[in-house]
Structure formats: structure tokens, C-alpha cells
Length: 193
View 1 (cartoon, rainbow, N blue to C red):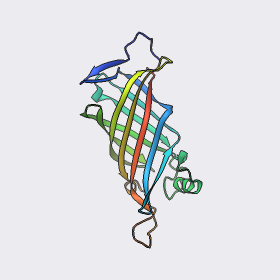
View 2 (view 1 turned 90 degrees about the horizontal axis):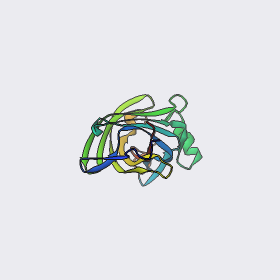
View 3 (view 1 turned 90 degrees about the vertical axis):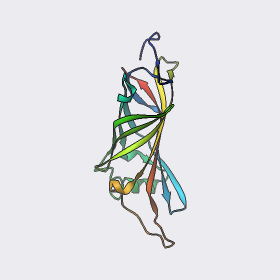
View 4 (view 1 turned 45 degrees about the vertical axis):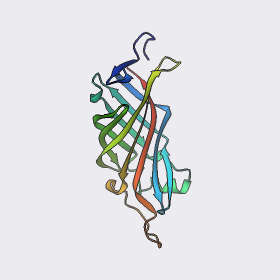
């Protein structure tokens, strides 16, 4: 928390952004979700209830960094049997690999409040490069005196690249579970230092 007289924002490239510092993902204001194709005809949506992230906003915003940890066992698609299967060794193997990890490697400005956050995603012990499309949603100070900013991010991965290869062929052609998974993140970050 900062004093009420300290600046909350600064101008950068025509955008109002947070001042430099360390921010943590607010557990009460976040969603780490995903979308997968089911039986080639519909989509299943889910999320991870327990996820944390540290965002270091640098003096030079393009030097900022993110590290995030997602607890695999907290996967939830609102269907208990499916969730148990997703936690099993056929998918996330949450007992052997309790976390999914992301570490950023670069930030690039795209247009206005849009950025690309490149990094390495680790799922089930396999690390692959990913690019997150990030939209900076705004910055301010809460009624409780906390400096905050909001963001959303998305990317698409091929789950088989991470060793998540379980599937069932369908009689009508295609497979039970699509290979492409869309990741969708919404959040607020709160200044710590």
C-alpha cells in the first residue's frame, strides 16, 4: 500500500500506466479459464480456482515481467467426473505435477493498450514458449488505498505439445477432445512494493 500522496499513474506512449513496482494478482478479482472443443461440436469451459502471479512493472515498461503459478488440482468444469479425469495421469496428473507455471521472457507493445507477453509455459513437466495477447484495462486506486490495475490475456495452445495426448476417436469422425485449448485470463493486480 502506498501513501495517498504518492503518484499512482504515469504517462507512457499515450497510455496511462501504473508506476513501477511489484504487484500481486488479487485472488478475489481474477479468472484463469480455458475453452476446449468437445466431440467436435461444442465447447467446454473451465477454470482454475487457485492461481497466483507476481507482476513486476519496471521503470521501462517493456522490461516488466510476470511469473505465475496455477494449482492443477483446482481445475473446475462444473462436472465432477470430468474434473477428476482432468486431474488424473491421463491429463494434468495433478498429484505428480501439482502446478502449471508461466514465466515471461519479453513484452512487446502492439497498439494502444494491447501488448504481447512472451514467455514459457510449463504443464506436466513440459515447457514450451507461448505468446499471450494482453489488453491493459486501466489503473487506479481503490477506496481502500490500494494501487491497482486491470488486464485480460489470452492465447491458444496445442495440448499435445505438453504431453496431454489422451483422446477417443468418434464413430462419426474426429475426436472426443479437441487438441487446441484457448486460455483466457482476467485479473486485477495490487501494488505490494
